[in-house]
Image 1 (cartoon, rainbow, N blue to C red):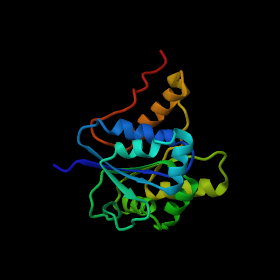
Image 2: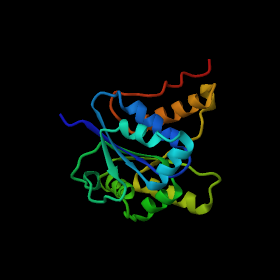
Image 3: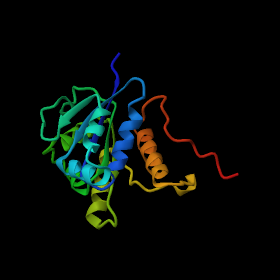
Image 4: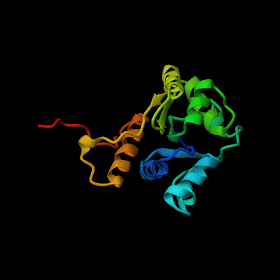
Length: 192
């Protein structure tokens, strides 16, 4: 049986803790195989936002790790069957490259593969405020079939800490991957 292969890409936008939490949450899911790509800018952000050992910790949660410059890796081909891809956080540079089809690194190439093969692609676009170019790129990738998920806290969940917010956002992003039988977030049951 082929596992549900998930590509997890991490770019240099702020929000490295989201990538860490997504990786941690995917590890115990039976039948899911995580394929990790981390950009050089993401390595810097991981170190700054999560500490000196963050990159090694992130890599320890993946089944396979690829160099962002290796555009010949397995995940760069549509013949390598994957279930979905998540870019978290997704920098505006990466978003723009995906929108323009500029597959100049493994992250953008793998995203392009997911779009052309009509596979699930979730982009946790991290920037604020947004200018018109950002919005147009978000519109463009959405028209191509991607799902854009800005990491906006769900205050209705009544978070008590930053950890609660990170956990909920990571769970929501995983839910959007469409993996069968592994819901991560508690469904809203109304306010009554």
